[in-house]
Image 1 (cartoon, rainbow, N blue to C red):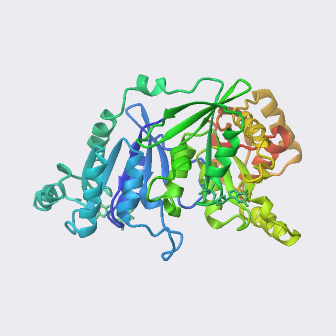
Image 2: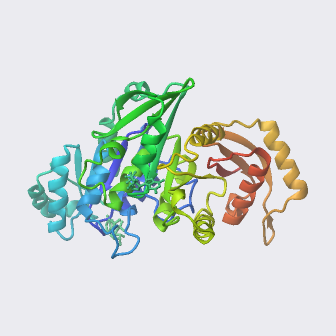
Image 3: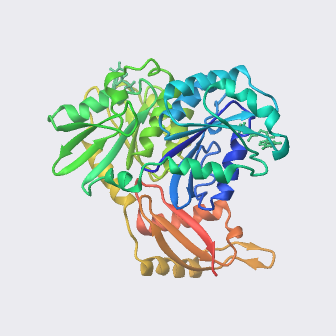
Length: 440
Ligand code: GDP
Ligand code: GDP
């Protein structure tokens, strides 16, 4: 678990600019899943040798302005702050304090998280004093002048933020044992998550223990099945349905995101009587982007009594699962128990794919084949040449291709390579990542 730093604030104060600025100052930002979703909200960053995750709440945008996702900024900030170990609260030094700022500030005070109050757009360091004082009224500490645009103040800020992180040794203590698999059950409200959870664990009294999760209200349930331990992540929301927000789709998404971040495998529960929705697709894409293996569960299959309805569901899956044709899809009923037993094996298989290591020689054999029989990209006089490839990570499997012109690698060529990799090595159930570097 990397420490999480949340960037909150009302629109237009400069959150995205700040995130980009931090991205540039700390050169380890990973953009490898670029193009997967437009609404990226999580960034991997590094400062002074410490890895952390930066969450840009501006990235959790409403799908449409009039739907359930147009949640007040304050509530978005609340959700982000809950998982963070530090909050960067951005305000606009050129406009002064607004009501929305005050409402975010009140919420942050309740969250009890360390807050950095960043007064942005103070581009001229000599003139900052005059605007700064009024932000003391927010009551969340000393205002720090910054200019996200020009980068003033961001280095010092990061030094202070990183100093708050728990010791690395403490973080390591939380590492999972080898035979432990973390599973998140995600999906829209009423898709059947809690029914499924009960069905999965209920039959054989297999619960080993409940353990505290990493955020305040998270409870994980550890289940043992034939020697393997499964950590069912964030079951508090699933079991009790206690929070007032539980039925609000937005919260179920934020909660799902949090769970995805701690899971090896996400079980996406879809209500077959509705089909796969845009929201389901969005959550699936986020799981992929975060490198989580994915199993699609078409729940309430018992309700589909005619062929047309079944056809409709499968069609919605085909249409919406374009980024993850590799995910297993299982028709289940949490009510009758249909195929629920099969879920464990699919989760095991997806997790195994996610930890796959391919030898360099097998990879380069594939590269040779592709050179001989595949196609490449040509742009004017420039022709893409792939020199060699090596696996640079697991969970999910990550491969680095050393090429002559990385900029020639288009999205469609990337997909082509991914398909060839999957034809050769499988990777059923897991996303994979491809990086293209120029050969030095
Ligand atoms: P967000 O909605 O909070 O993510 O805000 P953006 O990052 O999109 O910034 C909103 C506008 O403020 C953009 O036009 C930015 O260029 C501008 N902006 C952001 N930071 C600064 C800054 O430090 N100085 C100035 N002058 N403008 C800034
Ligand atoms: P959650 O909000 O995703 O946790 O959904 P619940 O587990 O609370 O289920 C929502 C509703 O759908 C409840 O009334 C369940 O009884 C019902 N339900 C869940 N799974 C199934 C199923 O497989 N078939 C049918 N017919 N109903 C189901």
